[in-house]
Image (cartoon, one colour):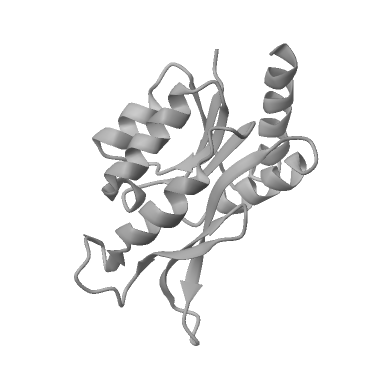
Length: 176
Protein backbone atom coordinates (compact mmCIF):
# COMPACT_ATOMS: atom_id res chain seq x y z
CA UNK A 1 0.00 0.00 0.00
CA UNK A 2 1.25 3.48 -0.86
CA UNK A 3 1.53 5.76 2.16
CA UNK A 4 4.22 8.13 0.94
CA UNK A 5 3.10 10.80 -1.53
CA UNK A 6 5.79 12.74 -3.38
CA UNK A 7 5.12 15.61 -5.77
CA UNK A 8 7.58 16.02 -8.61
CA UNK A 9 7.88 18.57 -11.40
CA UNK A 10 10.30 20.93 -13.05
CA UNK A 11 11.69 23.71 -10.81
CA UNK A 12 9.44 26.72 -10.35
CA UNK A 13 6.15 25.04 -11.25
CA UNK A 14 4.52 25.20 -7.82
CA UNK A 15 5.52 22.17 -5.73
CA UNK A 16 6.04 24.22 -2.55
CA UNK A 17 2.79 26.12 -3.10
CA UNK A 18 0.95 22.79 -3.44
CA UNK A 19 2.57 21.50 -0.22
CA UNK A 20 1.59 24.68 1.68
CA UNK A 21 -2.03 24.31 0.50
CA UNK A 22 -1.99 20.66 1.58
CA UNK A 23 -0.71 21.70 5.04
CA UNK A 24 -3.61 24.19 5.32
CA UNK A 25 -6.08 21.35 4.62
CA UNK A 26 -4.64 19.28 7.50
CA UNK A 27 -5.00 22.02 10.15
CA UNK A 28 -7.02 20.78 13.11
CA UNK A 29 -7.34 17.30 11.64
CA UNK A 30 -3.84 15.83 11.88
CA UNK A 31 -0.62 16.38 13.81
CA UNK A 32 1.81 17.43 11.09
CA UNK A 33 5.58 17.95 11.33
CA UNK A 34 8.35 18.78 8.91
CA UNK A 35 9.41 21.76 6.88
CA UNK A 36 8.94 23.77 3.71
CA UNK A 37 11.52 25.69 1.73
CA UNK A 38 11.23 29.20 0.31
CA UNK A 39 13.36 31.26 -2.02
CA UNK A 40 15.48 34.11 -0.67
CA UNK A 41 15.61 37.11 -3.01
CA UNK A 42 17.72 40.25 -2.92
CA UNK A 43 16.42 43.81 -3.31
CA UNK A 44 16.40 43.48 -7.10
CA UNK A 45 14.30 40.30 -6.94
CA UNK A 46 17.15 38.00 -7.93
CA UNK A 47 17.15 34.63 -6.14
CA UNK A 48 20.14 34.33 -3.85
CA UNK A 49 19.25 31.24 -1.87
CA UNK A 50 16.68 29.15 -0.05
CA UNK A 51 15.47 29.08 3.52
CA UNK A 52 14.06 26.28 5.65
CA UNK A 53 10.86 26.97 7.60
CA UNK A 54 9.71 24.25 9.98
CA UNK A 55 6.02 23.75 10.66
CA UNK A 56 6.64 24.75 14.28
CA UNK A 57 8.18 28.08 13.27
CA UNK A 58 11.96 27.62 13.23
CA UNK A 59 13.85 29.05 10.28
CA UNK A 60 17.27 28.53 8.82
CA UNK A 61 19.26 28.90 5.65
CA UNK A 62 19.28 25.90 3.31
CA UNK A 63 21.59 27.44 0.74
CA UNK A 64 22.89 30.83 -0.30
CA UNK A 65 25.15 32.22 -3.03
CA UNK A 66 27.18 33.99 -0.32
CA UNK A 67 27.94 30.86 1.73
CA UNK A 68 31.63 30.12 1.51
CA UNK A 69 33.52 27.00 2.61
CA UNK A 70 30.50 24.78 2.16
CA UNK A 71 29.49 22.13 -0.39
CA UNK A 72 28.17 23.65 -3.61
CA UNK A 73 25.15 22.82 -5.73
CA UNK A 74 25.31 25.06 -8.76
CA UNK A 75 26.11 28.57 -7.55
CA UNK A 76 24.73 27.93 -4.05
CA UNK A 77 26.68 27.06 -0.94
CA UNK A 78 24.71 24.48 1.05
CA UNK A 79 24.30 25.03 4.80
CA UNK A 80 24.66 21.52 6.24
CA UNK A 81 24.49 22.89 9.80
CA UNK A 82 20.96 24.28 9.36
CA UNK A 83 19.83 21.16 7.49
CA UNK A 84 21.11 19.01 10.39
CA UNK A 85 20.02 21.34 13.22
CA UNK A 86 16.68 22.63 11.88
CA UNK A 87 15.30 20.49 9.02
CA UNK A 88 16.21 17.04 10.36
CA UNK A 89 14.76 17.52 13.89
CA UNK A 90 11.51 18.87 12.35
CA UNK A 91 10.85 15.40 10.89
CA UNK A 92 8.96 14.10 13.91
CA UNK A 93 8.03 10.43 13.78
CA UNK A 94 5.45 11.06 16.52
CA UNK A 95 3.26 13.11 14.18
CA UNK A 96 0.48 11.75 11.96
CA UNK A 97 1.89 13.24 8.77
CA UNK A 98 5.47 14.22 7.94
CA UNK A 99 5.97 16.97 5.36
CA UNK A 100 9.33 17.25 3.60
CA UNK A 101 9.78 20.03 1.03
CA UNK A 102 12.08 19.09 -0.63
CA UNK A 103 14.08 15.93 -1.16
CA UNK A 104 16.70 17.37 -3.50
CA UNK A 105 20.41 17.53 -4.18
CA UNK A 106 21.09 20.19 -1.55
CA UNK A 107 19.26 18.42 1.27
CA UNK A 108 20.71 15.03 0.36
CA UNK A 109 24.24 16.33 0.96
CA UNK A 110 23.42 15.81 4.65
CA UNK A 111 23.82 12.16 5.64
CA UNK A 112 21.57 12.87 8.66
CA UNK A 113 18.84 14.21 6.38
CA UNK A 114 19.02 11.15 4.11
CA UNK A 115 18.94 8.83 7.14
CA UNK A 116 15.90 10.65 8.61
CA UNK A 117 14.05 10.59 5.28
CA UNK A 118 14.49 6.82 5.05
CA UNK A 119 13.37 6.45 8.69
CA UNK A 120 10.22 8.42 7.88
CA UNK A 121 9.57 6.47 4.67
CA UNK A 122 10.04 3.17 6.52
CA UNK A 123 7.83 4.20 9.46
CA UNK A 124 4.08 3.74 9.76
CA UNK A 125 3.63 7.48 9.30
CA UNK A 126 2.29 9.14 6.18
CA UNK A 127 4.90 11.20 4.35
CA UNK A 128 3.93 13.98 1.96
CA UNK A 129 6.70 15.80 0.20
CA UNK A 130 8.32 17.11 -2.91
CA UNK A 131 11.18 15.48 -4.74
CA UNK A 132 13.51 16.65 -7.47
CA UNK A 133 12.34 15.56 -10.91
CA UNK A 134 15.78 14.53 -12.15
CA UNK A 135 17.71 12.89 -9.40
CA UNK A 136 20.81 11.05 -8.42
CA UNK A 137 21.03 7.57 -6.93
CA UNK A 138 19.47 8.51 -3.56
CA UNK A 139 16.59 10.43 -5.11
CA UNK A 140 15.85 7.64 -7.59
CA UNK A 141 15.97 5.04 -4.82
CA UNK A 142 13.28 7.03 -2.97
CA UNK A 143 11.13 7.71 -6.05
CA UNK A 144 10.94 4.07 -7.09
CA UNK A 145 10.08 2.53 -3.72
CA UNK A 146 6.97 0.35 -3.72
CA UNK A 147 5.32 2.45 -0.99
CA UNK A 148 5.80 5.78 -2.80
CA UNK A 149 3.19 7.33 -5.06
CA UNK A 150 4.89 9.82 -7.35
CA UNK A 151 2.54 12.65 -8.33
CA UNK A 152 3.51 14.72 -11.37
CA UNK A 153 2.55 18.37 -10.89
CA UNK A 154 1.72 20.35 -14.04
CA UNK A 155 0.33 23.84 -14.62
CA UNK A 156 -2.99 22.14 -15.49
CA UNK A 157 -3.32 20.04 -12.30
CA UNK A 158 -1.42 22.09 -9.71
CA UNK A 159 -4.56 23.58 -8.13
CA UNK A 160 -6.06 20.09 -7.69
CA UNK A 161 -2.98 18.34 -6.23
CA UNK A 162 -3.33 19.52 -2.58
CA UNK A 163 -6.91 18.25 -2.21
CA UNK A 164 -6.13 15.08 -4.19
CA UNK A 165 -3.35 14.22 -1.74
CA UNK A 166 -5.49 15.25 1.24
CA UNK A 167 -8.24 12.86 0.10
CA UNK A 168 -5.69 10.03 -0.22
CA UNK A 169 -4.38 10.80 3.29
CA UNK A 170 -7.92 10.93 4.73
CA UNK A 171 -8.80 7.62 3.12
CA UNK A 172 -5.57 6.03 4.36
CA UNK A 173 -6.04 7.31 7.92
CA UNK A 174 -9.62 5.95 8.03
CA UNK A 175 -8.36 2.49 7.03
CA UNK A 176 -5.96 2.39 9.98
